[in-house]
Amino acid sequence: MAELETRELEYFAALAEELHFGRAAQRLGIAQPALSKAVRRLEGRLGVVLVERSSRHVALTSAGEVLRHHGRYALLAVGAAVEKTRRAGEQGTRLRLVIKPGGDADLLSGILAAYSRRHGARQVDILFGGATDRADHVRDGRADVALLYMPFDDLTGLDHETLMVEDRVAVLPPDHRLAGRGEVTLADLAHETLPRWKGVRGHGMPGKGVPGIEPVAGSGPEVADGAELTHMILLGRVVAVLPRSLARPLHPGLVHVPVADAPRSELVLAWGREDRRRLVADFVASALEATRG
Image (tube, rainbow, N blue to C red; front, side):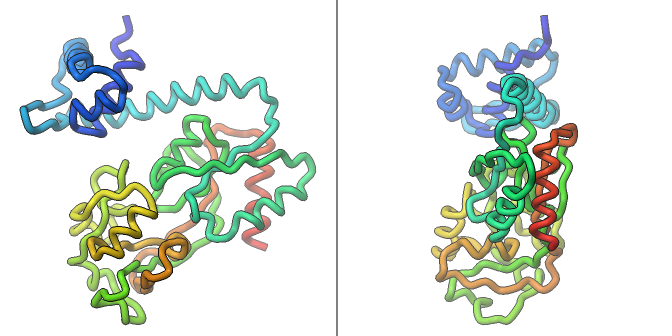
């Protein structure tokens, strides 16, 4: 019998994300005792403790962290196998592009126009992903290509081409102490509260490791998308450091101040590393033509 079953991995992945048996069970649509039993059965089969439990606390052990990381990619691989098998009979009739709402830096219309002029162009379906899951859409086969931001998005298993390089801005409420400045530095933001992005572990804003930002990251409330982020900034709960093009779709009342010494970000078009299909190559070529002149 296999040591790991897909259903058990799905159960453990939900628990590893929620760190709460009740919430994980509700998300999975099963009873909490059934989830607890499944995790204990998995621990017994692997011969390791995956989860530290108490009446008020659930935490992953080092072994649990390893399974969380590798299990996620295993589930993506299974999902991709299913999706690509289903699509094998479609003969490439359409191309699916996943983007973040407002996350195309106003490049999408030009890219689609350039692609439509190409011989053999297919219908392009636009999918909308969240703040952190668009790369997964490509890895698991839900999308063919994605618009992603480096260094924020995880490009593991993907190839990419850079479409645009831009600076980053601090997004502030209008009454913030720095709102009237022409520019700020990372040191100016060192004691500000930054948001924790849902689905991103270990740091409070995309761009882990940015000097001057990482020490205070993770102290703010969790946000899942731009609407939640806007609300938190307007309330004065957080400030954000974003690529300029991602800041523009937010609330017009917010103030954008360039961060002079923040590393620049890149808007990239990404696709599966093993994907050699003509429709993907043609779309990438059209995107480069439209953005590089």
